[in-house]
Amino acid sequence: MSCNILNSFINLYCQNCFCQKNTLRMKAIFNSSFTKVNKENRKTQQKLSIIRAIAQSGSGITVPEICKMLKISAPTGFKLVNELQTEGFLGIVGKKETHNGRKPAIYDLKNVRFYAISVEILLKRISVGIIDSQLDTVYCKNNTEFVLENTADCLKEVEKYITACVRDSGISKDHILGMGMGITGRVMQDTGESLTYFNFMDLPLGKYFSKLFDIPVFINNDTRCFGQAEKIIGKAKHVNHAIVINLSRGLGTSLIIDNRIVNGGNGFAGEMGHMQFGNRENMCICGKKGCLGNDVGGYALEEKFMDCISRGEKSIIQHPGHGRQIRYDGILQAALEGDELSIRLVQEMGFKLGNALGNIINLLNPELVIIAGKFASAKDILLDPLKSGITSSALINPLRHCHIAFSELGHMGGLKGAGALVFEYFELIKQ
Image (cartoon, rainbow, N blue to C red; front, side, top):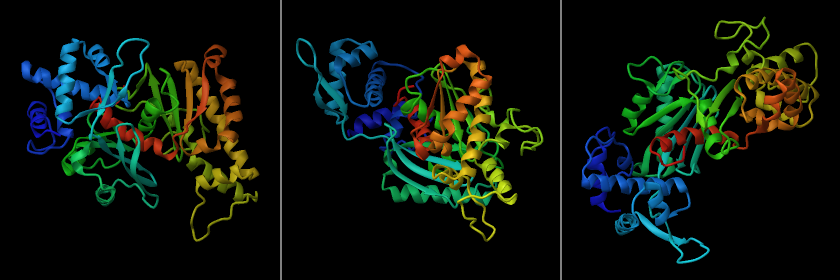
């Protein structure tokens, strides 16, 4: 890559950059805003737009396609592409098939890959990955012994884990554009604030990590990150209105309306777990009774399972002993292996969730409801009671046009969605 063109980008784009101007990091090209436009930096903007367009395509584009997208003339388009090719940014990767005439060359990025550090912080797991702009994972590591606490010691543990993972990944920091972080609890994406965890600092959590790692950091709730992944590479890729249910230890919801993730006025949208569809006798950690999350989710499944065992019901699950609790993912696995008690409890949850979802379908009229999270693995057990619950409360017309699907992203969905926050900001993936 040409140092001159990179320095040109840096000088034009780095008014708000987290990097020093003398670095050659690719991220410096994008982390910027314009205040004045002249002939020279207009050309730089056009080149940047070409790089973005090719990155978004994922498979390369032709000069006529570039000209159409940028609304520039063919001579200008060919001149810009030739310059980018000379500078080492682009290369020809093939020819586009046409019905007649000359086959145009397809250009793709050459020796340029964009990466993001992706972090997912859950109640009992922390995951760190390196994600490329196609949301492919080039490195991933999980710590299932992690316990999230709102303490300075826990924050230091997170810092050390991220640092060690980035080092072990072997990816140069020069190729990392930024960090995307999904964390459980209430998050204000616009300000980078985590209101539930690590809320004791003078700086918002996003700015704290930005300063610590010297890269831009983007933060959102873990469930909305999962919804982001579903929207870009998952089941919601080709729909404009969808509800993504993140059913794991807790119950979270990501709303996709008009093809955009809905954060809400302060970043609190999607708190379905605190809607009053649950048992009115159960007290929630929020201080209210009747929250659906008390009846539906991994925590509730563990409680109900142990209550049944204490009353003498039998299961194929062996109690781990030594004060250790049976985890909900073990109960899900037992259900898949035919354990009658586990199946019954999972199906009861499916009906309760469906009954609540029917009301949401009446309200929002989505095209698609996606069940994601750990419970997605039990789709064969969940589907029928889920549909029965939805039918019990949803109106016929909106239900007729709403499809129910189960996520296929697995445990990587949230991590990929967190990385997508970086690439979406820099316009390297399609909105």
